[in-house]
Length: 461
Ligand SMILES: *[C@@H]1O[C@H](CO)[C@@H](O)[C@H](O)[C@H]1NC(C)=O
Ligand SMILES: *[C@@H]1O[C@H](CO)[C@@H](O)[C@H](O)[C@H]1NC(C)=O
Ligand SMILES: *[C@@H]1O[C@H](CO)[C@@H](O)[C@H](O)[C@H]1NC(C)=O
Ligand SMILES: *[C@@H]1O[C@H](CO)[C@@H](O)[C@H](O)[C@H]1NC(C)=O
Ligand SMILES: *[C@@H]1O[C@H](CO)[C@@H](O)[C@H](O)[C@H]1NC(C)=O
Ligand SMILES: *[C@@H]1O[C@H](CO)[C@@H](O)[C@H](O)[C@H]1NC(C)=O
Ligand SMILES: *[C@@H]1O[C@H](CO)[C@@H](O)[C@H](O)[C@H]1NC(C)=O
Ligand SMILES: *[C@@H]1O[C@H](CO)[C@@H](O)[C@H](O)[C@H]1NC(C)=O
Ligand SMILES: *[C@@H]1O[C@H](CO)[C@@H](O)[C@H](O)[C@H]1NC(C)=O
Image 1 (tube, rainbow, N blue to C red):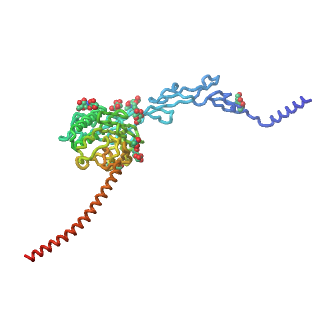
Image 2 (image 1 turned 90 degrees about the vertical axis):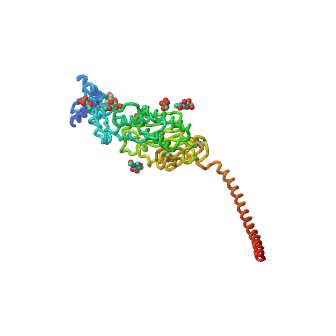
Image 3 (image 1 turned 120 degrees about the vertical axis):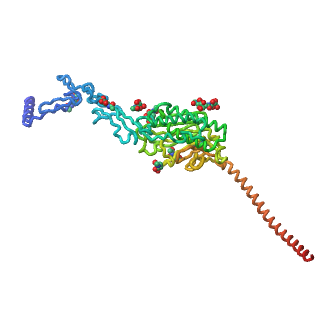
C-alpha cells in the first residue's frame, strides 16, 4: 500500500515536470571540472563546449588540454629586431632595451627612440645624430660637451687671461699645468679629445696649488693680487676639469690642498640636498643651486669643495695686518655659472684651526675693487661655538673665517677692569678740574695783586 502511494506521488511529480518547459542544465557552472584548466566553458541548450583561453592552445584535441602557447618561440620577431621577448603563462611581454620603446602596449615591437626629436637635446649649437638605441651630439667649433657625447654642447672660451698666464702675473709652478689645461681646452673646443684626462689635470692642479702654498709659506710676502690670481686660476680650471671627471665622486688630498668633486649626469636635472666634506670644512647646498637655470641644464651638474690649508700664511699680504684666518680657506664652485646672487644660500661649516672663543667673521675673497681682500659681504654667521662656525653665503667664491677683534670670554673681565679704570680716571678728571679751577681762581687773585703792585710801581715811576 505504502509502495503504491509512493509510486503515485512520483508519477504526479513527473507529470508536473513534463508540464513546465524543460530546464537546461548549465554544465558550465562547474567549469574547471568539465573543461579543465585554462579554458572557457560555453553553455548551449542541452549541451556545452569548451574553448582554450587566449594564449593557450588545445594541443591534443581529443584530450582537450589547453597548454600555454610559447609566443616567443612560436612567433619570432614578435618583439621586433631589438626587443627581448619574455614568455608568461598565457601571455608574453616585449622588453625594450634603453633607447627603444614599444610601438603600443607591452606586447608590441620595440622601435628606436629618435632622441634627436627631443628639443635641444644637443644644445643650441650641437648637431644630433640618431643611432639605433642611442644618439650622439656633434658640437660646432668653440663648443663642447666635455667628451660626454650625449650631453649638450656648451660654449667654451679658452682665451681667459688666467688660463693663459698673463705676463708679469704668472703663478710660480703653474706654467706646465696651465699649458696642458689650455691644450685640453682647445682640443675640447675642436671636439678632438685626446691627451690628459680630467683626473690627470685635477691631480696636476692640486699639486701646483700645493707647491704654490708652500712657496707662499716660506716666502710669506705675497701680494693680494697673487692670491687673487691663484684663486681665479683654480676657479676657472676646476670649471673645465670637473665636467671631464669620470667618477661620481672624486677626492684628492695632498699636504696643503684637499679637493672633493661630485658630478651627476642625469637626463633630468638632479634635485635634493648635497653635502661635501673634507678635513676642516663641510659644504651643504642643493643640486638645484648647482644646476641653476634648469632650462639650460647641459646634462651634467657638479659641486666642488677645494680647501687650502695654508692660505692663512698669506696674512702678511692682506691690506689689514691684523686680519688672521681662523680656518682653512675654501673655494666653492658649482656647474651653474650664475652664482653672484644665489636664490638659496649655501652653508659652510668651518672647523676652527684652534679652539677659541674669539669672534669669527665669515668672509670671502673679494677682488672686484682692487687687488683683493677678505670681505664679509653676503656671508653671515648663523651658528658659532668654540670649535665650529657655520656660515651662510648667498654667492660663491673662496671663503674663510676671519679672526674678529673682540674677545668674548675676557670681555666680562675686561669690562670690570675698564669700568674701574674709567671711574678712577673720571674721579681724577673731576678732582683735577676742581683743583685747576681753584688754582686759577687763586692765581688770578694773586696775578691781580701783582698787577696792582705793577700799577703802583708804574705810578711810582
Ligand atoms: C563542482 O564540482 C566540485 C567538485 O566535484 C563540487 O565540490 C562542487 O559542489 C560542484 N559545484 C557545482 C555548482 O556543481
Ligand atoms: C638601425 O638598424 C637598422 C636595421 O638593423 C639599419 O638598417 C639601420 O641602418 C640602423 N641605423 C643606424 C643609424 O645604425
Ligand atoms: C660616444 O661616447 C661613447 C662613450 O664614451 C663612445 O663609446 C662612443 O664611441 C662615442 N660615439 C661617438 C660617435 O663619438
Ligand atoms: C708636483 O709638482 C712638482 C713641481 O712641479 C713636481 O716636482 C712633482 O713631481 C709633482 N708631484 C706630483 C705628484 O705630480
Ligand atoms: C707632505 O708632508 C710630509 C710631512 O711633512 C713630507 O714628508 C712630504 O714630502 C710632503 N709631500 C709633499 C708632496 O710636499
Ligand atoms: C653614479 O651616479 C649615478 C646617478 O647619477 C648612478 O646611477 C650610478 O650608479 C653612480 N655610479 C657609481 C659608481 O656610484
Ligand atoms: C642652511 O642653514 C639654514 C639655517 O640653519 C637652513 O635653514 C638651510 O636649510 C640650510 N641650507 C642648506 C642648503 O642646507
Ligand atoms: C642669475 O641669477 C639670478 C638669481 O637667480 C637671476 O635673477 C638672474 O636673471 C640670473 N642671470 C642670468 C644672466 O641668468
Ligand atoms: C659646536 O658645534 C658643532 C656643530 O654644530 C658641534 O658638532 C660641536 O659639538 C659643538 N662644540 C661645542 C664645544 O659645543
